[in-house]
Length: 80
Image (tube, rainbow, N blue to C red; front, side, top):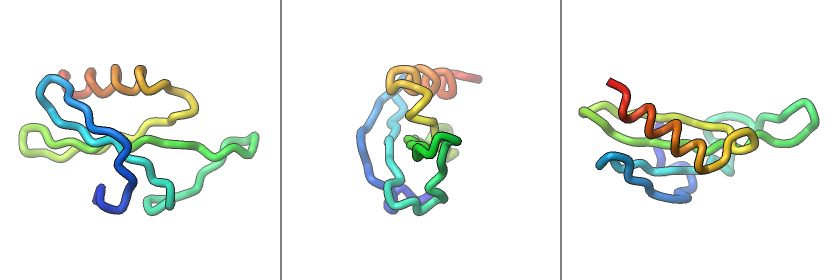
């Protein structure tokens, strides 16, 4: 995934790992996708490098708070 095509919204540091958070406002990587009620599904994309491997996670903003998303990212990063 090429982050240069997304909108950078924040930078995080979890356990020494730098993580970039992005929005795909122009729907470069798909969509827009909608819930049954017609609302657009808003996603945050997280991109980071760990142990020479690039990772991407995207999480649903409508169902998860920013704090919960960061808790999940921490679990991903600290997993063996």
